[in-house]
Length: 71
Image (cartoon, rainbow, N blue to C red; front, side, top):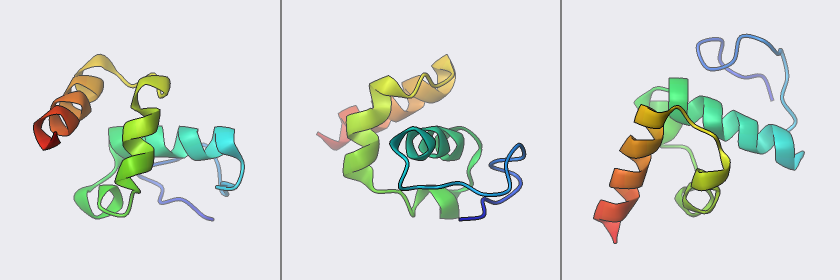
């Protein structure tokens, strides 16, 4: 797939079947994506991967708060 430039500017294509690239792309979306990009994510997958993504602290805290509020 070809990522949007405001999310990923270092690659022209991403293989979402590759687990490493998929995790990296989810991290990019959670960090730089817009609401329409974030809404396309699989929420179960994001919640499972959240602690593996090495997000910036403020972004991580935002998503942890979001998932904690959903419990």
